[in-house]
Image 1 (tube, one colour):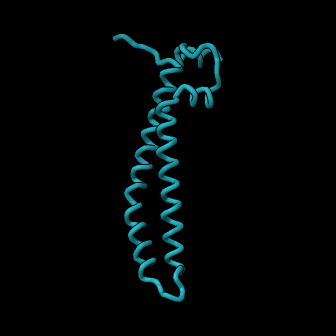
Image 2 (cartoon, helix red, strand yellow):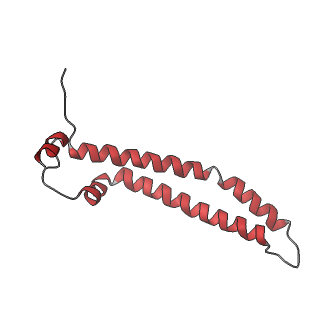
Image 3 (cartoon, helix red, strand yellow):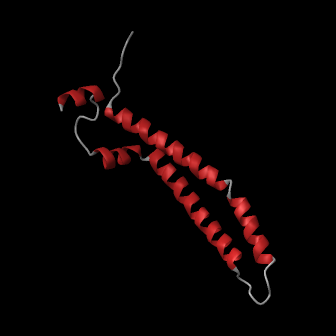
Amino acid sequence: MLERSITKTEFVRILSRAFAVYLLVWGLSDCLTLPELIYSFLKYFEGGSVLARHDYWTNYYLFRVISESIRTVVLLTFSVIFWKNWKTVGRLFMGSDDNSEAPLDSQASEV
């Protein structure tokens, strides 16, 4: 059987892409809650009193819609960043050294 050791560059690429997929799934699951929040906001906004146009529930669901939208955009943006810029992410977390093409098990034995 031919065993091939994984290099540091390959490890960073796999780890970065796996984290990008995780963020993508998290962001898409947050997208699924947005219609419910928008519907709730509109229900309380249209059914409010004439004298007190913005009651507690209207403000609550407005805050939830805005915060959920921002969180979804941030998650999807970071998912794209981790997928496309895996080299930059690898340098950020692991530092830049000259032996990035060396196998991971040989680097561990050197230390």
